[in-house]
Image (cartoon, rainbow, N blue to C red):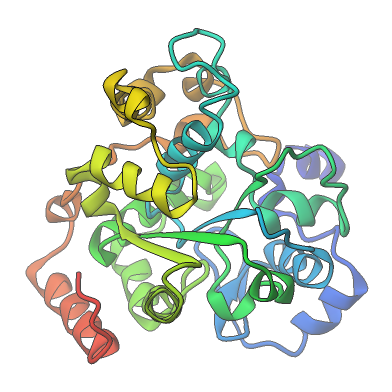
Length: 331
């Protein structure tokens, strides 16, 4: 296979040949560690990024202009991002797209196509993309830590929804997901090797605990701007928390909608069983190269019990206790 052909087959998230000189210069000055999929991870503003991802971060910070009506969905990787995107897209657009019709966009589009990542989709493909095609309220997502958000987001009245997940399930899901992204010739990452990295904070957008704490603290200070929710709570009572989200976003369900079971209809349409069974989510790839099916593993709470040793569990629990001590946040 020629090098040119190999580059064409390489997923975009692994390519490093489209970097700006600004990004190349910055990377040369940053701490680096071996990545889980990409060759290297680089530490920028206290958090770890791939080189291509970092370029999107820089462009986003420089050019994104938030609007007061924007809604930003934030997660650490593998914390329920796909589910959150589907729920919020259906919630915010329920007057535009009737839930009972087969034509709803979620039935024919992967949620990541409907709610794009700022730094992983929009600003990594174009340094200053045209966002005029987005209707208000604009719905975007990001994995960016709070400290790295564009200044315009801080200065605006846009709303942020942050979904976090127990670090044990987050780690197992991230390990399984990154192994799916690795090319065949790379082999798979051992659970033990990446566990050590995760505990040291060396993971995509890690350290996990610092990421979660940044948004937790902001939600305590500014609850009208940042809505903080745990994946486990959402799984246990999805209708209750969807109604709370609607209230937070200023698009509460009317008594008529409640009587018509619109809340339950959204939850059902966006359920793991329904989304994972759709043809669009079983076949094809995202433009960046990931298989659509890679985003649907099992969505269960407590799956970590099938993988982690008692020693691993104890270590993660101790790190969580130490990192979150005094914050009021517990997993």
